[in-house]
Each structure stands twice: as structure tokens, then as C-alpha cells.
Length: 70
Image (cartoon, rainbow, N blue to C red; front, top):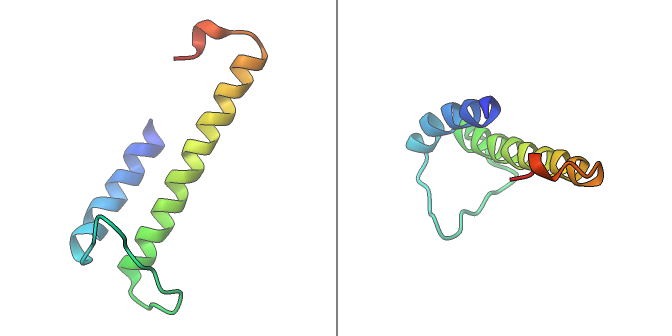
């Protein structure tokens, strides 16, 4: 939860400075805009946090501790 809060804390200021499309945001690898690169990095970190949450839940299920799985 702390990592998610920190990611949100970094995301909001960068999001305000970038013109953002909610349907489809193209990202060009040749961009030099630091705010766009920060948004890409934060999005990747958020994905990795969610992946670790999934792995953690899988370990709970494999150890048959279903009372800890929400």
C-alpha cells in the first residue's frame, strides 16, 4: 500500500504537466520529455507492484492459507 501511495504521489504532478488521452496514449521511444518518461516509469513500477501482489497471493493459496486471501 505504501508503494502504491508513493507511485500516486509521483504520478499526479507528472500527469498534470502532460497532455494525456484516456483512451489511447501513444508513447514514442524517441521522446525527450522527462514528464512522459516519468509516467512510463511509474506505470511500469505500478505494474510490477501488482505482479508482486499476485505472486504473494499465489504463495498464500499454495500454502493453503485461504483466510489471508481476499
